[in-house]
Amino acid sequence: MERAEKHEFVTALNEELAGTSVVVVAHYAGLSVAQMTALRSAVRDAGGSVKVAKNRLVKLALQGTDLDHISDLFAGPTLIAYSDDPVAAPKAISDFAKTTDKLVILGGALGTTNLNPEGVKSLATMPSLDELRAKLVGMIQTPATRIAQVVNAPAGQLARVFGAYAKKDEAA
Image (cartoon, rainbow, N blue to C red; front, side):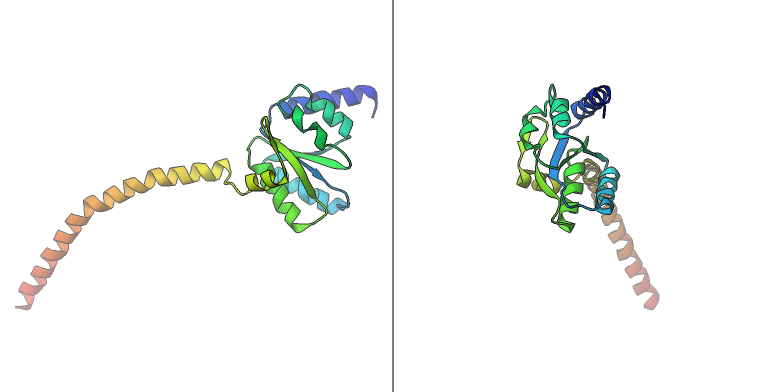
């Protein structure tokens, strides 16, 4: 990579990282090409991205962002996974790390907050934004259906009582 290409890469990565909400840093030594491709597609399907770059370039890209405090995590063969959804990248990386012991989560950042490996894993257990929205809509709709059931219940009971009296009169 030439100097101009490196500068262009650092600038592009800086812009991407400045607009992201969560970053996960992990060691990937020993992963096969197939496993790395599977990891990239899993994170992409979750709505995130995975980058493997020279540590020095990533540290330069982190400067000037809220994520500058995680620069010390970059030693050895590292990758970064990031997403706009605060749960997507940690969930995808944690799920993949369960399948292989060669992907080791080092930590990450949620905005200006430093995350240790346990913090990344606990963030991965939280529901995503879409799941939270679905739960909220469900909670809003549930009271409406219950109100309709309560309002309709007395009328239904009266109809059953009248029906029972009518059957009783016919039988007599």
